[in-house]
Length: 554
Image (cartoon, rainbow, N blue to C red; front, side, top):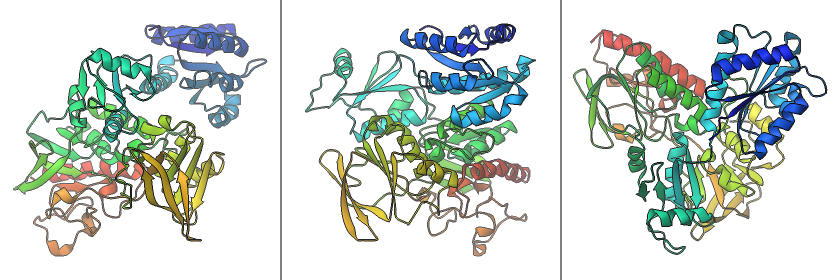
């Protein structure tokens, strides 16, 4: 494949030559550096690149140019290469225009002139933008291919795993994609429209195949780490959401032998968010998967072992050691254990929902299934931020997105910025006082029955896609009676632990410590926690200090 292009635009020949020189010095080995002396000529070059099938990774445009400003160029060039990163090169006097362009032209960043030295003022910013672009860029594909029909729950589980673990893959629909039948034939399998015994079929980059694999089998085939390298660690973290990832980064960076165990994918429930716009330090927002990717990179850099897909099965404590049995039957031990289990979507308990789960009914999974919903009518159940973020993401693909809310509005549980975005999106409709009472269909979801609680009217909506984002249910039953929890299963820590349980140590219980010395809980799984990404990151970071103090007294 030809090198991706970095296109820089400036009407000043000296500035254009200088920026092209600096770009070529840093990125010339991996990218083709192109330059243009006006917005018009740059737009013409962009159109030719598209016709030739080339790829633009980054636009770097000067703001103040005659005839066409940098912002105007980016507004016209972005639809041609929508995944390309967009940066503006501007003088101090034009910063207001640059800030405005963050919204108007979906600007990713702006840099002030002069950018010398580039090692400090140019390359770090562009390195970050290019890393983000590479994380989502999918060239003509030679990697993992998943062949199945759209309504296969097994296929959905595999695709959701690949998507959430940011493993590039291509999905081919057996019912509509001629290439799918061809690949099946080449693999030596036989399949008819009436009988799909080999599906889902996974073809790996080397041409080898997996017939109807489980998620664990697929993970192992792709080289994911599912087994611990050591029997003992200073710190074991169960759960890979923001709280668990933060604890892993701080624990390992401070010298603790650390392993993190995640049952689905790093990022947890937050990792499924299509857009987080109120996280400190990211003025244009970022996706949950991007946040998880950055955190995983940090954690691995400091030597954290990450096991996924893997989960805790049982827990026992002997003396100062905590023994954790994993879902594959193996056991690891540690002096300190952080439970960052997060929460799962609360399941709807009504007729038809379980039957069509994975076949039109989905919990979360917005980024996995959104593209398949192009020009369709999508229904989202829930009124909190996760539902709003998903609705905004679906609105880019679906013909209509309807949000079903049991209450009178979104205002009680959704951030105002999301409410404003939803109000300003033409193809999103909010239906207050509406609840799903039944899902109907044959082999897939075909319609839902919805009740209007104000009028008691029953309504029928034809749809193939129902996405559920309600409630928070902790998965803590496997802890048994050892770790004290509230009536809903959330783990109690610090002053929330029942005092009648006693405490065996001379020191006081730490703020995030459970009723068992050396076992801590952080993030959404903790009793009365604030269900926000930033608070989870804060708790995970703080908890490591308590771990150090605990270990110092052993």
